[in-house]
Image 1 (spheres, rainbow, N blue to C red):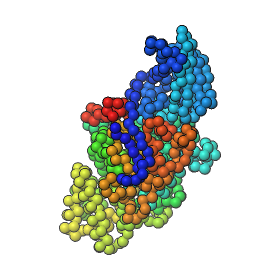
Image 2: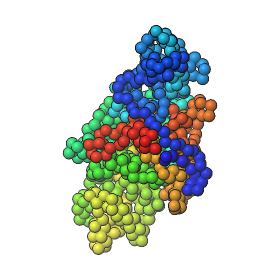
Image 3: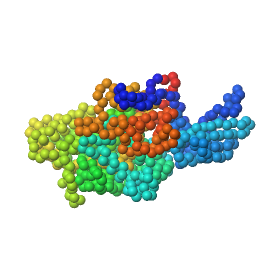
Image 4: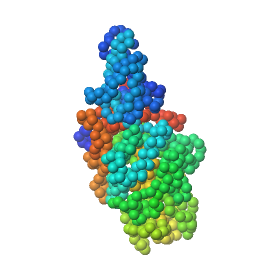
Length: 610
């Protein structure tokens, strides 16, 4: 029997043990039926010994079975019905919450927690049973939300974007935090020069789980019925690929309509219609760009509005880069080590979403700018797509510097990253090699989008210094999703729950053989910034930057900061599942036609497979 053991390292002490348990299949019908043994009647007729209760709500698919729980949702009407008149008594820790009489009981649970539903039915025979139910929020695919729920969700996000944190707390309570507030904390943690406490390390998953959890609390301060949705972006890959269209088809989806995230495909790169039209980026804070906006130092964007460029200097990656059924399948079934899994999940299986949404603008006419170097369109595309890493990593490695200050009347073309040393041939050679090495790495994985031949041609022509000067004069800047202030964009928030859902499915369908927080047969690398930092945020006992609501030892839910390892523990389903939410399903039916069949978790956890 395979298990999940989360530990400190290859030989560290054990922290949690979860064994595989059978899971019950999801029911697709509107009504879920639960059958109990009759505690007071015993004879040979099975039907006479059972009491059946049907549980339903306004969503057809019932959540919770994969977690070993009968789930009801807070602030949503739940209907419990039997086939005869019954006495209904619902209690939480022996405190009666609801009493009713009839065939059905319509109940709106208000608090997450564990409840006991006592049912006593008097027809021909007296039957009585107790049903334990778990009141938990349900995170659903954003496309699967009821229209009314989606409207409330986006209305709440609009509220988070409209208030500052202090004003919001006065109206909505202490759990409120504005989108700008979340963005500034994320920015401060992720935009340091020596370390990124949120990305590029072992803490990526758990830090973003906590970030999503605190955002969910802020939404619920506005509307207690809400849960953060996930965005299954493998559906987008399947849709575009099967349609035979190019990358631009991604932005034709309802997700980017004015009533959802809003559309920013226009020349100004901001949303101009809908709730999030002309959403502004706040100014001030511990980390700002040269114009004073709460953006990363390498993002010199002058625009006051949340920006999505979608392309890189008007060029784009192919759909092969977008996360697909194949990449999510491989993350589940081709990796046996948590260490390897968490190192990979931050990149190809999820990172391209930020890349495609954010993009880079401000490049000007690249063909004209680099005309003297006789670059082919393929070379210009390689150079343009290099923006995914070059500005940020070059700034972090002190190759580029950002202006300390640009006045509001400074044109964007005059406010840009510059080479850290001017008129220095050795330094230009260093930057040139840095760019070349990046392109070589990318070309090894993506030969269609990257090639490095033009570097050799520039060197043979003795144009290295001039080429580097041209690159260092680019006023290019990323959209918010491509930088450390990304939480200010509403489209940021459903991305990471998708990763968390995949992680939970992995634990069910193909648990890790090696679940230590570290390498199994090598020195552990906690983050890519080990030469310049202590990798704050990426160790098992480092606190997450945001709070989570979790179940404590007494069975109550409390909001607190957790360590990375505590977050990981809380995500493991079973009798001690600690999170205040579940995911609606673990199903990828659209992947089957492409040959990637994700087994139902009840099949993966059936007794015969243990």
